[in-house]
Length: 336
Image 1 (cartoon, rainbow, N blue to C red):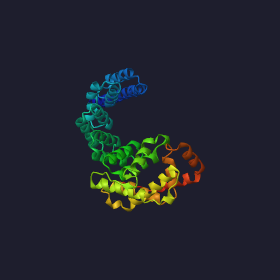
Image 2 (cartoon, rainbow, N blue to C red; image 1 turned 135 degrees about the horizontal axis):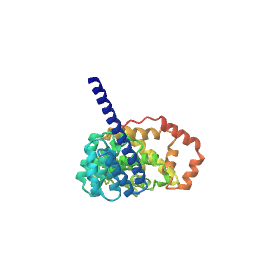
Image 3 (cartoon, rainbow, N blue to C red; image 1 turned 90 degrees about the horizontal axis):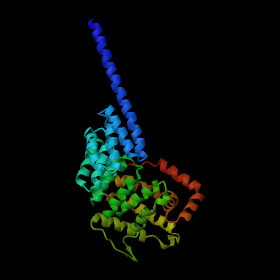
Image 4 (tube, rainbow, N blue to C red; image 1 turned 90 degrees about the vertical axis):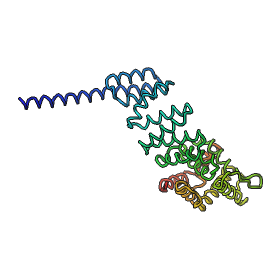
């Protein structure tokens, strides 16, 4: 009799476990249906699916997150906050911290936004999106050094995240650290899948190269030693180019100027108080300057400046493009 009771108890426990698994599977299926509706911007229908899921599985954190995210996307941030906080407090999803931070950022409630991002980073230190969002929030507050630091962490985690390079480039430019900004813009352009969209970055590069050159004079506008040294080095690199090497073609002239800056930045890299910048940017672009691929690089990143000329040049030099890509693939880059 005792053995029979034990068997019955075990069977009941197994049945309960299977039932719970079935409930979760049914709820998860409804959540997936909701996300499809969300992507189609059918927000009310998506929320109805999430509500159905929560009726079946009241503790389904994924349903809470997706419902909160959809409420936020549909303009109902106040309703989204308690749902996202529930998920964030469980420390199971970095996305909940990110969306909560975005809500507070949208409201210029930067204290709460920073708190959300930093709590998320404490729980998920390798989530690049949280680092990036933290940096954007700092930049919106004109805290450019903190924005730079956050962008560095984001780049370390995901070296192909375009907007992190843009964030780093803007944050360093705003501090007058023009060598840092210039190389970051160059890296950004090198990764940009649609070079025709490169106008902003090209504009910054041209501004930085001639920022301190006024006619035949060099006028340094930096506000501290680091920014003054960086601006002086760029001005010296550009102004020291032999006029005989200057081409009437803007792209070729730009390539000569960039090569000169890459050279001086690499030679004087000990001055930078940033192991990340020294290793990741100085070493890489210093090595590039010594290759035969500067022409490929310059024509690619400046397509927006002279589309017909650059696209024609690139089309006519397939072997150089292949060689450059092989060099990129074989060149190891360190971040610290």
